[in-house]
Image (tube, rainbow, N blue to C red):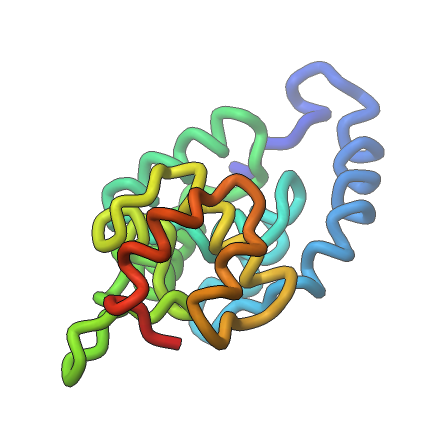
Length: 169
């Protein structure tokens, strides 16, 4: 049975949901999801409350995605019981734990492909610094040299300079 805001005593729920979805429209165009069973469910359901980049940066295990989806449903996400495993499977398949970004031939970390968690683990960045790198990259495009990372607000450039020989672009 589909949970909806109207059933929870908020007669204006569908109107609010429609407004949220309308405002989320630009977020849909910022990131596209890979093809696969569950893509449309994820786009419609998850984008009602936040942008797709929130999802694409997740890199959670299947169990964690299951927990996250359950939590979102408890907060009002509109999914039928049968749709839950489809969404969880899609998210785990496409946005599961990040594959190692280091090149197998060089052992260097590719800062244009690495997830925030990988930047933390491999370069010793804080969570906030790693997120800032990923967000800067998404908004401004790929880095071409280590000095480009100095433009990232909130990133300690001394850390990057000390690790510059471990970076790949």
